[in-house]
Every structure is written in structure tokens, then in C-alpha cells.
Length: 266
Image (cartoon, rainbow, N blue to C red; front, side):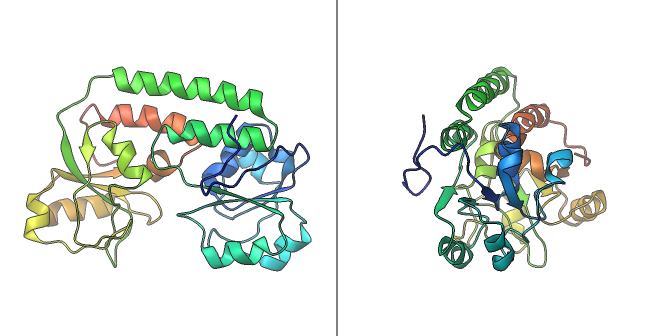
């Protein structure tokens, strides 16, 4: 039973919690664990599973929330993520929400602790345990699948300015499961900015353009491939970056990428 969150705070079980989730992937996980009726608020980016989240009040985005609307919903618990939510926002909400549950998955297997934490805090242990069994099966299948040679792949999440991911991110560690490493860039940030230059292009085997948060398309991939002369593939950002429930499909998706298909569409 996992009862400590990502910043070491202990959370007692609360079967009647009123939950606000500011993390789209965790909103989906909470629904998976049978907790949709206890979710009283979510962001506009919390879009899965559509039939269930439609009935949950929207409270803004992951970084810009309606504090007064959240106050009126009288939540007992707020679920946030270190990467996705900003400290000042969380601090403002902590003034009237008793329990702040902080998450920070950094690798695929961190999904196990995440599911157990949500299950323990919100009294859905049995469903969390069943979900963890599914994850272990999907993870074992990926590990057993044949993979190609190691490659260095630049994963792009934004343009104007161009931005990528560092090695200390969930996305990079997902890629590492199939032998794809992200290059070290000059910017030390977790989500570094970069410029296209000859040294960078020569040091990579290909480029992955994510469909989120920037909405890269096949047209972007085709244009960039012509520009840099390296394979460029459009990849499903949800499959690569959403921990929680979507990680099961994400592991299967990785298995398909591992087969070496660098065609553009995800």
C-alpha cells in the first residue's frame, strides 16, 4: 500500500473524498479505478474517458485554473503533478483544500506506485492491484519483444521556439525501453530549447514530432525531413507521455515503434 506522494507527504485513506484533478492522465486513471463520481473538477484537457469526464466540472487548464470555481466545489483533495502544474497555483489552492496529492512519474514502472497511491488514498486498492497486474503483463510483453539497434532520436514537443525533452523525463525513459536515446542538448532544462545546426543533425538518427502539446502534423514531418535530411516521424503524444491508464496502450505503441517503422503517421 503506497501512502506517500512524490514529495513525501503521507495521506490517510479517504473513502468519501471530493477530488479535483489537474492532471489529464491521472483524471483518466481515477476514472479507471472507479472514482469518477468522486471527481468534482477537472481541467479542460482531461478528455478521457469522454463519457465519464463530460459530467465533471471544468475548472480551467493545467496551469490557469479558476480558483473561485474550485472553492465553490468544496474539494477535500487536489491531485497535481510537478511537471504539469505551477507552484503558485497549487499554493493558492492549498489555502482551502485540505489535502494536496503530488505526483511525479519519471519512468514507465513508476505507474505501479502511482496506481497504488491513488488506490490507497481513495480506497480503490483492489482495482489498483488489478490494474497493476495488467501493467506488468504489458510491460513484460514489451521487454520480450524484439527490438532494433539503439538509436538517438530527437523528440520535439514544440516549435517557435523548438523544444525537446531531457533524459530525466517520462518521455525519454519510455523511449529508452526500446533503445531510443534522446541527445544531450546545450540547454540544461528538463524541456530544453534548441536550434537546428549541423552538429545536432549529424548526431541523431531521426526525429519524432509529438502530436501534443504542439499539434505537429504529417505536413510538419514532411517539411522537416526535407530540411534536415533525416527520417522524421509523427508520434502520438498521448501514447508517449500519458502515464496512468493510457500507459497500457502506450507500452503496446512502443512495441510497434520498436519494429523500426519510421513512416510519418502515428
